[in-house]
Length: 322
Image (cartoon, rainbow, N blue to C red; front, side, top):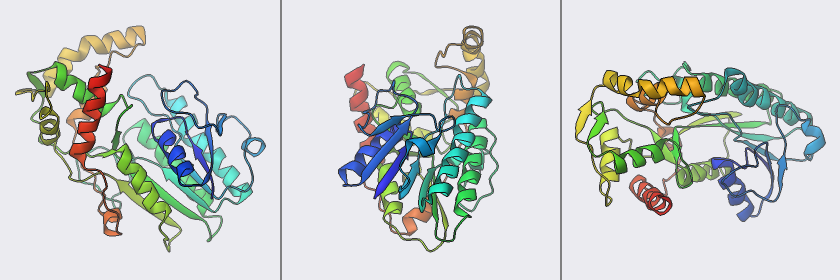
């Protein structure tokens, strides 16, 4: 197939484009960021989905779009940037898909569209985002649905992953591993809440599973989360099994964590620099994100990579670079 992958220089997109290339597909990437730590595919176009005329840049016979491009960060992104990269860019991409009659789209959304209210979520739950990221990714879903409604022959698959982790990723899991290497005593809260997550390798496998599946309906939606569904304590116990990593044993209340981190929060606002510690990250870490992906498992998907092995692989990588 001739496949367009957006955000192909990012953490997920760079893995996808090389995977589909290895499988023998004709791949084209598009990304507006070429200052990246990930391997850039030689067929990647430097362009902004929201600003450039895609009809002038892309072939008109694309058979599948995998839309990974998005704005996401815990720090330093304005509402306008989120809206431009997550809604306007998707709208322009779907306009291109309508004009060129692209028959199939896989859209990477997020479990954040459900909201973070500590209630177990599957694909049947109502959408109640309470973050700018979730709001704008949901806006992207609406744009993708606008395209699929143009023809009963079109197929849309929406993937909603939770926290994605793996080697060469310096966000949530990296921060937890780093804190357990350097902080031997304290943890925030009791740690009994579930933190949903998916390794990059399993997310790629889920993508391949839906890519190779034939669905009767025009729209299919899948949460993407690894099993088992771990609590923070169980996750930390896996990390603590490795040498020189320690299970913190003194829980501090969340309000005290906010107090301790307040100077970093203030400095960030004054200097516009990310000091890695802020109220938003504490809030996210302490909230249950209990999302479930039973739907994709019920259709025959088998998890290839175990959580414990994926975390161990990431720890080995962490040790090499630190």
